[in-house]
View 1 (cartoon, rainbow, N blue to C red):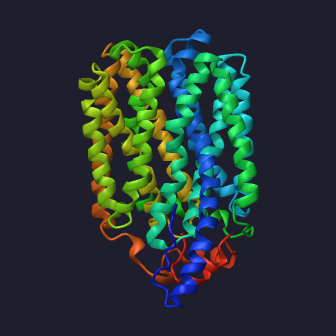
View 2: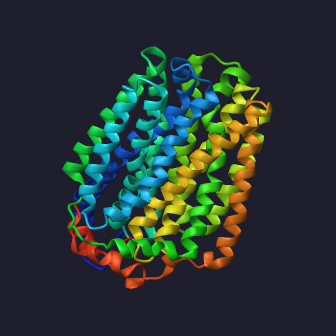
View 3: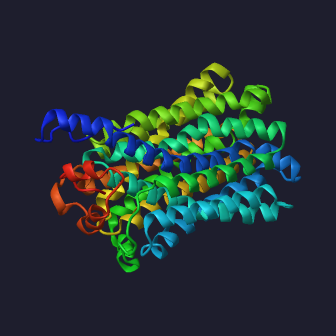
Length: 443
């Protein structure tokens, strides 16, 4: 996890080093792990529902493009729930919000597991999606508040590791359970993971004061051109990855001709790429935020364009899926960008990033499904995804020329989001000695 960021402190070396190694890092690691566990639960349900699509489609007697509406219903819940909850929850403590959001998430997935019909499943998936964006937004702000400003992308990336590790462990496990026991058991597993997250957050999440923000102030983010441009990059540029991933299980069966037992292996390959991307790419983003985002979009476009060429060979496809998974790091990069351009409306902007992410989750499968319905084949999702990534890059060019080369994170002191930062400094995190040594603002 993150090492102590205060190596330049002028205090005595021996005492400072001992204190850092003995106290601060374990506290930070526990907090980030607790927050990441929620990401693990969310990532498992979000991506596993795609990999389970052929199974619940057959069980509920619907075709697979129609079953894809369950994916879109979840995404719609995220899109609507993230900004709504961020505004309504502005006056509540972040720790309280984390607990309530995970409770609703657990309920939604339990109802999905018990859904008697496809209509009931659609409603349950919508409910499950409502807490998604708000949880990640609040968790990202909590994580960023515990580290210096120049390490924010890494802290957010570590929270997002929960989501990407889910694609290595949670999604393949859910897929195996779905094949062996039934798809309903997979959603029951997610509900149990959400309850575990509630317990961890109740024990380890930093206690903070309520009333740190104001709903009207949060809505101020909607006035910012830079916020909307950044959200547009996420909403469109990320759609390409979802276009391919949603129909990956069927592509593996119909085009690559692998056995269903092998599908979890390819899902894990995607997850390894996503996890390594979130581990290493934010390090570059902390040095050059917007150039890193642009590079990821171009990289994703190439990987998606190669998808139809690699689909016939399982080994080439595994490499390509790994590359597509690595592009998931774009989420943490854009999350940091929003912290820079949102001013006082940090909570709403952070949540809106996941609204945009799940707009992509709805847009990608929808356009990919259209291409499949038009008879272009299962691999047509690759060129569709590449086109979305290219459009996202064109929007990135607009953002970069609109002051993107000089992001706010280079501003030091209290000039960076002062009103949002001030209450966090008064509320002691789990590592108070760490906070007291730092002069860096928190996000």
